Length: 250
Ligand SMILES: Nc1ncnc2c1ncn2[C@@H]1O[C@H](COP(=O)(O)OP(=O)(O)OP(=O)(O)O)[C@@H](O)[C@H]1O
Ligand SMILES: [Mg+2]
Image 1: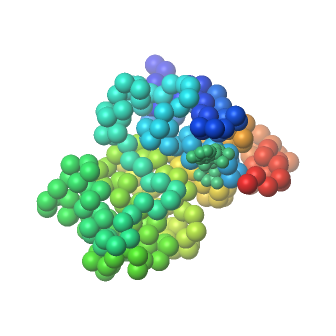
Image 2: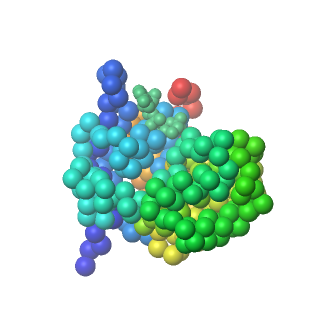
Image 3: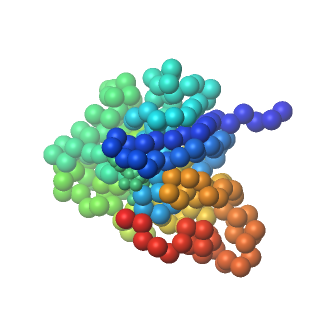
């Protein structure tokens, strides 16, 4: 039996208001259950636009998306119940404590009381934040904010997790904690779609990657196989630079 894609993206195009160029154009892509899928591309390539549309933040200009058999146009609420989102910009309330922030996000997913408190404490411990549970977020370092931002997106144990640059601007220690946690979640069955500018990280983490440039997919596949198909390049970063060029984008 042929495996059905868990996420089906067909001919996705987005024109932002007032722009004559599409931010993404005709993106077609199937993602399968249990994958860690990487969306890679230079600044402005269309990664955040794609993730935002997949999460139902705004509709595409054209195109179709189904997640777990649900059409995003007719069943956005059903989709929202099974997805988690970790946005590129840290989305936390700076004047609330870590605990208050996570309680707020937990409540959004109908988690309450002792169950929620236990889930929060469990994750604060994993991410080395338990000592800071009652500290306001505006006193946190960048790495602490990123770790907390991640917890907020996965408290409700989503089947699919979208992460937009979850490891940007953090130290090696924070990066390892985050990547190990994502690997463990994936082992337990969570499908992960993530964007990154770190090619080595994506090469090691992802079952498949799509390289996006100027709104279109220009290459897709298992990262190790993509590199093996181009013996003239020794790693994904070199192949990425060859495919996308050295010109600055923003
Ligand atoms: N709200 C918006 N209104 C108008 N244009 C936008 C808007 N958001 C993004 N764009 C444009 O759409 C294109 C894709 O942007 P997007 O943020 O999706 O890229 P990205 O790949 O996430 O880049 P980065 O790596 O810098 O985060 C860019 O040309 C950007 O300028
Ligand atoms: Mg982005």
